[in-house]
Image 1: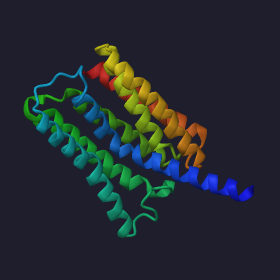
Image 2: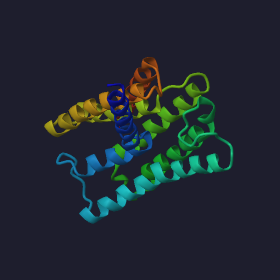
Image 3: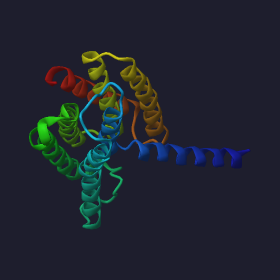
Length: 217
């Protein structure tokens, strides 16, 4: 009986690690871009083949470069764990990611042709703000970055729904609420954070990204 329980817990841990990896905070801007570009309600004059180019650029700027920087910090001995499980390891990787996201937001706001991706620009600025706040807070308290990311994704689409109501956005909001609960459950099960850390993170992300969409679009 104990062996079955151990195996069950072992398998569940792997599932929750997988969920944490798939919905890593650095991937959420890419997911948001994919949803927007292929949503029926987001009509935009971009050829289908160009959409994947935009998605790849977003993925490169918001995931690959920040993740590579974490690996550089790790292999250079500046942090002890590339997964950033220790609060002490998070400050400089988070600070670098904040700066790079702000640069990416500037690029998509002022340098991208015709400024055709205003929602993504807004989201990048909002996420940059979230990262700055998380960087400051992490110096004192290990807030959940996964919570901030998923809460921010939800706030972003709730803001869009408020500005341009549609059933399509309602579907994605419901889906993100489900995924938010799943990701927070995973972080709690893995004992990566306390309930206060995940819920405060989700609330912070939601408020910043919701206001960023409603007030500045």
